Image (cartoon, rainbow over all chains, first blue to last red; front, side, top):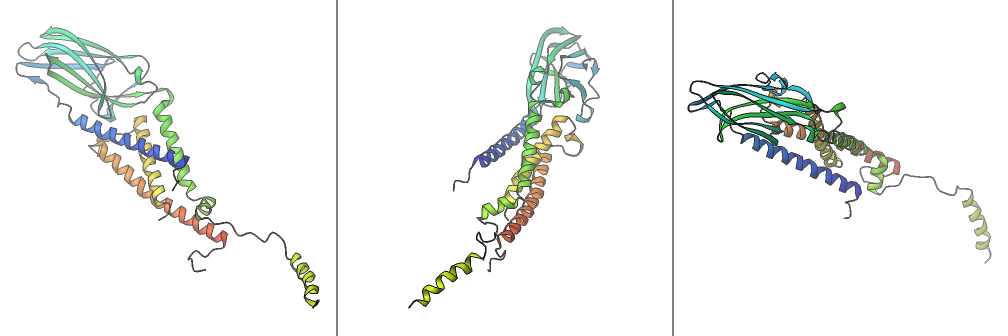
Length: 225
Length: 79
């Protein structure tokens, strides 16, 4: 049909990218569902810990609405202050995973060898995502004993870009403006007429005075015979 | 019928883009009323598709009627 013109191709690309985003969310969601449930203790290795993010205890920031507000600039520090509950526990790794829309986008870990109690400090940065996207990130803090989780805690951080200037925001705004324009253009009479092959009714090119003149020239010719 | 599909497609993309933008700005709390972000996403996208599908159909119908009136054709097709 040859209908897939430039605008059609653009729309197809937009729909395809939206479907990809949708798929990303579906996959992210299934990945989030596969995240192991928080485990506070296992066997004799009962551990209690206080986790702080840039000096703020994270215990009360366990929902999106209570996310800790921070900015892309600079590093952030996560500190685990842990202690055994009962028998002395052993911890050999502290780990922080950053999840966005349920998908892990980065993990950092530090190996230690601590028994009974201890403090573990991790330094991370959101700088790799600084100009790409902002929003609420889910952070998953875990202490492990030779691979088995002895403590885990989830908390949320709202990372903001300066003036919300990120690539994703700009692209989303452009998509929104384009789609609003596309909807508005549906009401265009010109476009509808062009699609239907209609032309607006216009008055005759030569006004009526020429018609009598033609008939007057023909009249004598008829009289000849 | 005409314009409904285009309006619905635009509405679905618009809904998705708006939702993602709100999420980017950090104002979207998925946990408040929906446990699953996908449910909210689908509800918003489908709602936008339906609403803008109807809007698109109305706009297109109006534009066609006007174009036909300007061209002097009978909208009912009897003339």
